[in-house]
Image (cartoon, rainbow, N blue to C red; front, side, top):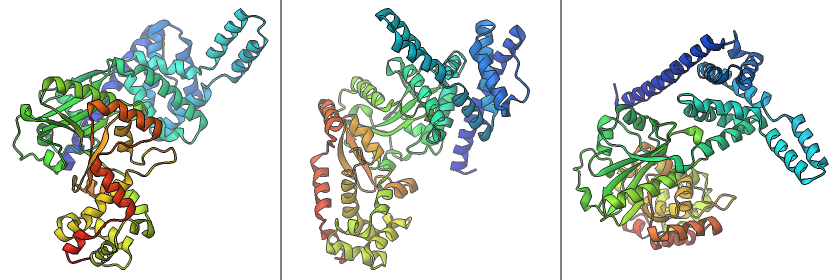
Length: 492
């Protein structure tokens, strides 16, 4: 079995066990309720919207007390877990549409508020209006909070809902309800930071492999290397999901700022003494729960880890990321020839055409970058280095319609108060790194005394904090680069 097959097997086994454990626990709860108060599943409810509505309504009636309420919620959740994709869409549509705000109740409450004759009547009508504006589905969703893995279930349910919510106003409303509930439950004040090491439970280590979203963990040996003595891994947990990390961060303790992720992840490289390190490099930050999209933990996680590491290693002076540039190639591919050539000298345009075998500069550039091993050819790599680094600097000055940088990783770190420190040539030569960013990576540096200032400037004015070197690169990109490197290669 190949390494990728082994990793996929670990992931599939983990998710199958997680699904089985929840389904089994909820089956027992539902069975207990059935014995106690006669809660039973209507025949054919899974594919019948009217029967689904009946079961949801019974969950809201609270007949039979707490045991019955938990049993109905557990049975309803089990139905959802066992549905196929079409069945889940039907389930969500019933929940969104048939348990939305009661329009008649809202209109009545509004009329009572308008007609209120005194302050006491207005306050009473205001309270009634607030209650009328809360859809019944919110109460139903809240009932899952009392079930084992119930909060995790709601997060996963929202993950299913998110791609549908953009297509339908009722589903969008259900998504907003879930988002508001989860936001209140996942306030950072409730979260715990824990270090993960090789002695952590195997089930937790499996989750690191399954959830790693930035740099794939290829094997157990790879994972062990990432948890070695000169490495650190921290994760955030919620009390209602004690065994389920919400986000985790992988850190390398190094001398100086690292510029290559392959060097950091080299399993053959000897471990260094972490007490001699002067830099903490955050090279992977992963949010693990798609259903918690829009509820950010990464900024809190970074600040907590900086505090933790500063206490353990007083010699650390530098806190920096080694981050991907996931949108760079897509941005480059969307540039027209005129836009690209404006950032090149005539020497560079001629050199690219010669190397790419095309009289069209844009086609020549794409032809070179589409070759999987272009970076291993010293002539091609040298010819492209200055050009692509300048393009990357220009990329970070490009903004969306709201004025924020187009790069999602940049938006995250710059909003947190970091500055764009350095652009690293061939920082990630994996297939993914070459495909997404032409092999480039960047460092965002967190200078503790400047974090608040940088954050305020970014939020209020859209100012991107950059080191002097990156500013110079961005300026050269706007003005058009020189061709000295190409001339040295005889291509200019």
